[in-house]
Image (tube, rainbow, N blue to C red; front, top):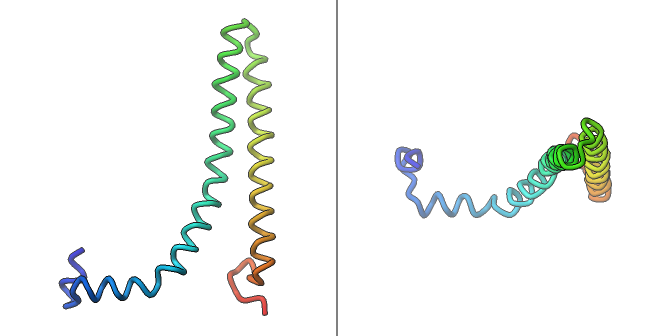
Length: 106
């Protein structure tokens, strides 16, 4: 906030300089958010299935098998989703001609 005022750049100049980089930065942010969401989905699947397994164990008195089965199902489903998303990201970068290090493939 204060760095723009201390360097003698007013808010209008600062805003114009940011507008030039926004389209590329927004695209990078979308990809980063999408890929970071894969890990959150894996954790959510495991935690959700854990809670379901605990409820099954308490309701049907099947301890610990309801929890064990639900955790395994959550891990399998979460890992499937993670691998599917990672392969989709890899295919997307291969189609655009960008190597894994970000260099242009051409």
